Image (cartoon, rainbow, N blue to C red; front, side, top):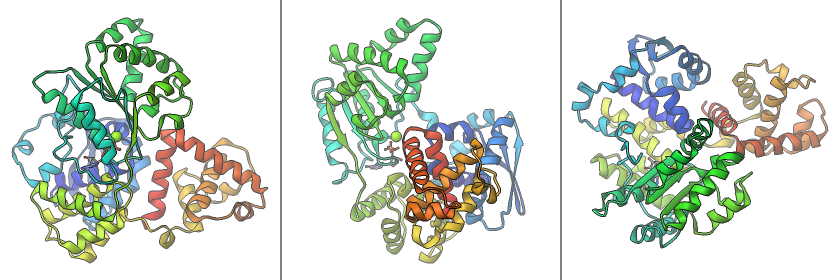
Length: 451
Ligand code: ADP
Ligand code: MG
């Protein structure tokens, strides 16, 4: 398999496991520079990336590559400050418009003015009972921006098409000859804009830069939770646009009333327009999505494989796409896989908790993840480096294996089971509020379930 293709498929898988921002931070300027028998050398732009990738993602990357090409047994990272430059210098790769090319990340095509990515359109947005209300609301907004529903607030779990839909609205509006001004911002960007403006005493200028906008789209607004100052400024920004009948579109992973530490007045603003959710597609819709995506790419896969994906990859649409792309990349270099090899390739996408997760695996994985001896998880200590991993282990035993609280307490040296309940609730609550923890839990689970 060609280095670049191999790397693209690793990237496709990594995107499933980490947030966009993290993905961009750690993976964007990386590439395979050398593949030498069992070893693959990956170049990264700086020492910081090297350390982070080798500590956090080594195993997952190795496993992904090994699944694609089982001669690969080792990875090495080298620092190459040039890799950023080379990544931007799109040369030969650019011309070679292969199928693989279409699977690649199109991050660089983002419109500088609007921040919209043109790949998100209504044309390639599939509508089913899981998202038809959100779709209808989006169409109503298109009909009369600023007047139908303001704000339009779309919520639902990750990978279910929120970003796709709200960007599609933006793209459609900018393509209209009326030339309305659209701005798309992930909420991290909004927050960092506000923080910078506060620090440099330029809040008025920041607000002025937003005032000519006709349609403001903020993605993942839940990140504003707990950020008091940003909420206060956003409240004013919101109001001044709203009063001028400018359209505001928001997405979130949960409805306004479930966003913790959100000012009451913002919550009521968010609830004041149209709140509509996107949910999970059912089996038939998942199959239809797969077929549509294949059709778009003008590619084919055997029906039994498509049915296998549709019945086993259930988490969200991003994973469906990931599974499909994994197979397509495989097809590009090998023959089309049969069902058995497809199953092997898709192992990482298919979760069957009761087959693979068990007590030993969870303890082992948590300890390894946090760089601890398994024994020390059971130490009678209040040291933070131990307490947190221990709570995570308790949480996962409960959540993934449905252990009873007293059973977990017994495993941990006869602790009072209320301690376990406390740990469970604490991790649950924090994982809802804290990205880093959610990501850690995701990575740990991925390791528990991936063999
Ligand atoms: P979210 O923002 O809800 O986390 P995204 O909008 O990023 O999810 O969607 C994840 C991936 O799935 C994207 O590549 C997107 O294009 C695709 N996708 C999601 N929903 C649909 C849909 N209804 N039709 C086609 N593709 C979709
Ligand atoms: Mg999104």
